[in-house]
Length: 557
Image (tube, rainbow, N blue to C red; front, side, top):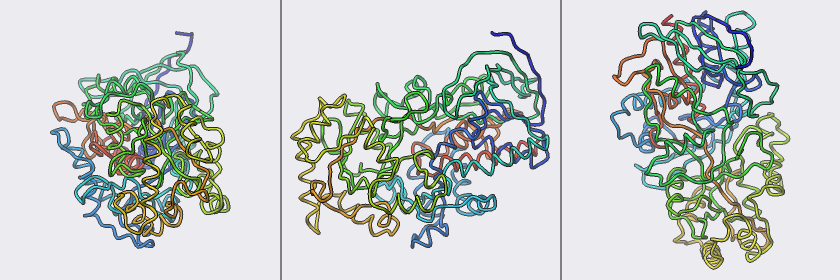
């Protein structure tokens, strides 16, 4: 340890982690008149955590935005979708089930109005994520429910960051960057705060991996402690250790959708304090990941948010089965692809499709929405050509192949790492067979039928789904292939909590003084999503569980 000071602090509440759930919890507690200390292992440039990098998608039920587009949604339909998607089937799902019911009511009633009061606005076109493609009792969203925050992740973080900083200026909140918790302290079974290491100061920009050099130690005494430290997506070792056998073997090669500080380090700390960690084998990783040509953190990957038209091929060139089409079933696609024995797959599409359907996840990849720039938004979403960030990947991305004819496209695919397993004859068969189907008003191709159905929704027709056409039509070209990787992202399990966000022990009893929120708590209860998520429910889960934790902890001290 380098020479440095040992410091001691005290407060009514300690919040470990300043991501969205932590900011919400701290702002709620401060509004209730409590003294709060927030600690985080990163420099202050990272205030807002993962949520700052997010697309800011939110799940609402029967919203004004939905009604304007003729979408008929209801609490009953949303409950049917949530529980069919979650697949709750364990004794440990008792609290997650209750959290799911509570969250559905929040999303149907108070959530939107609460955010609007804080100045949060929403893009008027509602997206349709996780479309399912199975029967009514299968997984997926029956209707579009993905509401994009105007300002994306930073716009969602902003009001809570502002509230925290106002409370800080008023002396009600103390923010301690570069403070890494290594122990939750306890007296007679009650958590009474935390202790840990003070890390060396750094001027690193947001998301940049930072040094773990220790320069001191600290303690914080608090009547209540809220763990809101995120999941494990930045720690591939933990991801592989928790990888479920139902999803096959973990990939040898993955790219990373979250900064390196999302390392799961608080899991062992919370466990040692008596918290019950459940559903660790439930996780949410994407299969449309691409290597970032301009990375911020190690192994930085970006997710393509695809429309429904691209042809999806496995590593050998065989088309994925029904209903594993782009945007339909993330985890079902991951499970299928892990059974192929290869870590990558392919999109094959046309320039016409990429211009209409490709959006990249993340605040930094959507400058129009993030910057609330109407002129840029109209140009990028409705104008000719691919959006600027997408075009940058077409020009510079290592996973993109752009060619004028199919033979050259296949050769370019084969030239990429792993391309040697691609069967050119199979690729040609799949593309040409699909194109024959598109020429007819009638088709047996389920994907073509589904994309025609998608265009019956005005939002899809306007900005999300290209007019059905032959991939090989020269007028729609050039041809594009994209190599896709598994992209780590979310933990769906975590600390088991009751509806007040109080941490529970293995015996089902409350751990006095300890609360958990956000991804640390599986976004509520230790796994509110079950096995799968409906999208727009991650930052929303941070809001809901953070609010519950802040209010309950403030009331208890």
